[in-house]
Amino acid sequence: MPDAAPTVAELVQRATERLTVAGSASPRLDAELLMAAALGVDRTGVIAHGSAPAGAGAGSVFEGYVARRERGEPVAYIRGFREFHGLAIATDPRALIPRPETELLVDEAIAAVVARLTAAPRPEGSPPLRVADLGTGTGAIAVALLAALRKRHMDEHVLVVAVDLWPDALELARENAVGHGVADRMRFREADLVPVGDVPYDVICANLPYVATDAVAGLAPDLGFEPRSALDGGADGLDVIRRLLERLPAVLEQDGVALLEIGADQGVAIGAAVAELLHGWRCDVQPDLAGHPRLARIQRPAPLA
Image 1 (tube, rainbow, N blue to C red):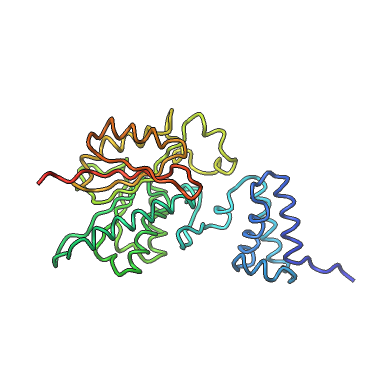
Image 2: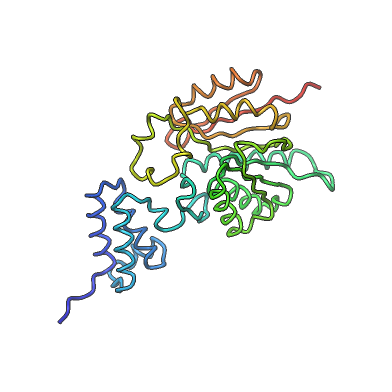
């Protein structure tokens, strides 16, 4: 009799062993996610039905996925998406994969927009609140923000301008916006940080490159598959962020707020940069769930009465 087809659990275990040898930091999780993608189910289904045979077709697809992961390719690129703020965001080498720590920026952006929309009644015909997502990449921040506002029936009062220097990334952002049904509240602009001559924004979100150049080579192997331009922030990691700080007076409304993701070792440095370049502006640094500095909230002072 021919040998019985391997079960889902057996294939996952073999892949886990291979990915452990390959140096994956999360071999079991990687194997389960890749199996879920091969079977067209979620990870819970893989765990719950481990005793079922995978089937030749799914087994072959899974083998191909595991081989790609052994070579270091990120799981998100293999699957074609990454979960972010409750959404499945399409991912591929056109842009940096969205990370869980960036969800803090989305949460703060939601709070900032909601606070402005609810502070006082908006007269009929008022222009929409303007939000910029600079270095949008996959568009994850902009899409997650608008998806959350749509649940609150507030999205019709907001316009988000997604900006990126790279047209391929901008196209991926557009695909995600269309896929999640929020493209009608977005505009897509190819520019370096802020479109020239654009009118000021009420809220600016930015997950810009902030890894120091010397540290890029020492990052996890997975990151070698992602665009270096989305990582390399110059000698101390803050070159691009400083360029944005210099432009903020021209592009941020009075009493506007800029929300910038930063590196875990840049809490003091970002405060010093704001003090040097934006006299009288307030900078508060918020930690992520691990307690590391992660978000700089930069507030422009309201005009004197």
